[in-house]
Length: 364
Image (cartoon, rainbow, N blue to C red; front, side, top):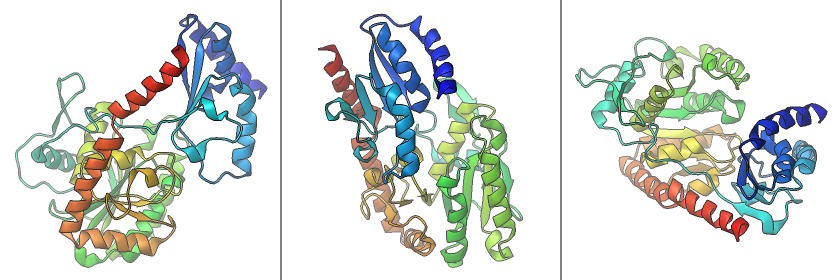
């Protein structure tokens, strides 16, 4: 506790130089809780926004809140993604529920032509080229043209799958809670080879993510599991590490990979809010996802995606994938409903309105 207080006090000292009485300071996540008192001391109103949470609290969660609560006692407002994540000690009249949102104009979510999608996924080595001549280009946030120049690091047997092969994709960090290994098992054991589908487990190049020390371990575990698969199953699965040299290039690649998917999976074991779920839904991709945390708020089961009640249930995960792969009309219907749901509930406009309402309670 003393070390945490010392570090956050040093950060607060830099922040205070930019704060005037009457300002509203928005602090994000446990790393900033120790800065609440300092911001209040110079006459600012403080909103603490927590992006993480657990639906079923346990002893570890209780201990964590016990650590943080004294640092948060003077916050004026609290923001959580779900009501289930609100700790019992938070004053109800100070709590606001604001689910996250995505920016539809960000490079990761912006519209992309079918030709650009094909060119980008072929250029990184995810699928074989279809012989088209379109360049792997995208538009940067400032409007300037960008081009995908870096290959992905891919582990697979043989050449890339043909461009017409249905792709089942999970895009996430190499994090045990994202359960990439479980997706691999579900696909290998339960997805019918007759569908012709290939699985791509897609994450960042672990050397390019400084704040994720677990990533390398999880990737190594997935590689070991992949090597132990029978050859026929191993040949349908690839582990993909995306380049991180240029974050907008990386975002464009994620955009293209999600748009190229026949089905997007998010088999998380726990999830505060599934940003990759929202991103894929916005691209009208049919989803198979775990019914955990914020994912249950994002996807209406059987209407805007298919949920798996038990995230460890490999057979049901595989069965839901087979349903979509075998039924193009179901895939189309789920994808269209997914895009509509994100457009209605999970874009920045709604997010901004809710923050405006919150700020109004502080400025009256």
